[in-house]
Image 1 (cartoon, rainbow, N blue to C red):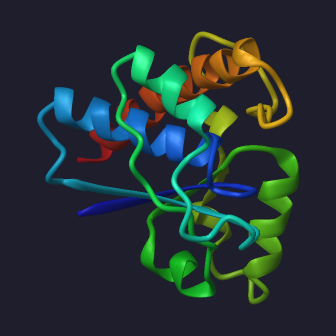
Image 2 (cartoon, rainbow, N blue to C red; image 1 turned 180 degrees about the vertical axis):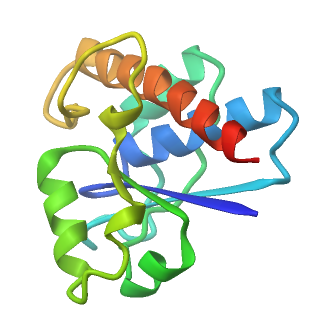
Length: 156
């Protein structure tokens, strides 16, 4: 079974959205039982909370269910997951610092590495923005999730 972990800062906007989008894609493609998906944050400030209500609303409008409870990434996640997908450059650097022995570099990616139609260097954090900011982040996440799904399907 492949295991994917999406990581953002607080685990209440981008990474739970990516988790919800990926779970939906896996379900639609009949492989939800072959891939485990989770998400985490680099900080513990929101631990135990549900996703941001604004992200839940935007995701719900597109048919995605976000019911994850925030948690902080751990060193054991680096070992246990096949893909650790970060949302922006700062998160990418933070996750790489967590890998002090440099054993898991081959597993750590930026979400934008999987974009196929859109172009961006990061998935912007919409937390301090408006609904359009949440929609744009979700647009990028949807595009990248399709690219990641294609990669995973090619590995199966």
